[in-house]
Image 1 (cartoon, rainbow, N blue to C red):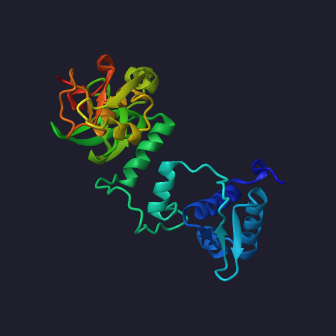
Image 2: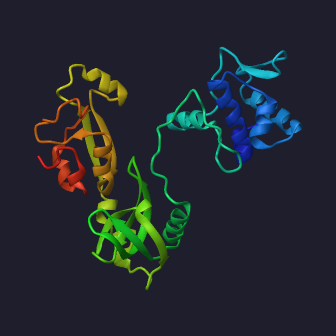
Length: 290
């Protein structure tokens, strides 16, 4: 038998598609493979033969449907991550680049209301990759539009919107800028100093552990323990101090001193409250000021 390591990345992608389709749709045909990867009939036939070599008991050809069907003894050849599975099912297992995405009508993803400008994202990523400073026109809720010079080092999704983590030359601090509030980008007046680079962003480099528990007011905490795959009613989450506030807000974690926020609002509570002294953006944390 050939080793999976001997296959090209493209071959592995095609075999993973066969595996995914058998696992979640119960069948797959050569035409499915040809449509997805724009390959020829002979190449598709070889891919199915290769898949069968690695997993001989996973599928059987049903001539009436001209498709390979999942056998009861099926064992997945590839490990498909839960988030990737559901995203693939919702988006039609397309990549949006070489293959158009056809949204599913039976597996619906969350509605996204905020969509960053691709040109802004591209300019930020180029600056991050090339370690460059930028001049931006930025609109904040508190002070409106202003010009800033920033030194970006990471893009972050906080659960609702995308931020760029950067050194702000105006206020001389590392902070976050909402990507959709950047109206224009151009080159900055000078190259980044060492003090403006990611290695000097202490909140970014500080990894902390948040210990989450079902909210004490819940009548049936086991339901929450199952949701989050907790062990002994505890879930330990390692995150950057700079991002912990976003995580605690996104998941409505009660961080008040006596966990006094009602369970109707918060289903999780923070057990190790002392860690809050290391958390940035504490004002957005549920109960963080109590």
